[in-house]
Image (tube, rainbow, N blue to C red):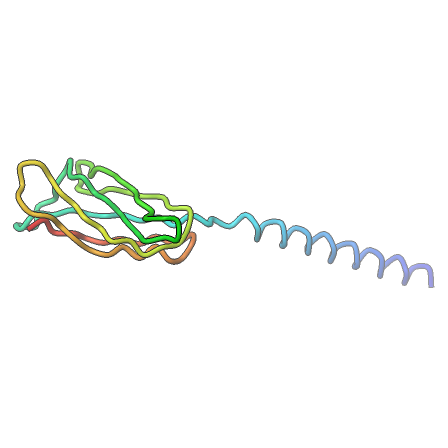
Length: 118
């Protein structure tokens, strides 16, 4: 009888430890939304040095993020809360504006959009 109680206690302890490990790791999931905006010109060539603005309406006013494209024509954004952003891109020396929508509505997921300045 003592052996059976020891086995039950050991199994209960293992289940409890595994439960705590599972719950504690599930709380550490990435809650940041990752977005990438690629800017191209009318010929389809990437545009480096373009100014990219993300804007989303909020109860407390617009949420705005600004960035600049790198040599590959991409600007990346890490956003703490899910939102759907209006995207505008401009470049000094190129007339026109690129517009688009970036959906960052799933925490931990990546989303991207290509915007053409025309």
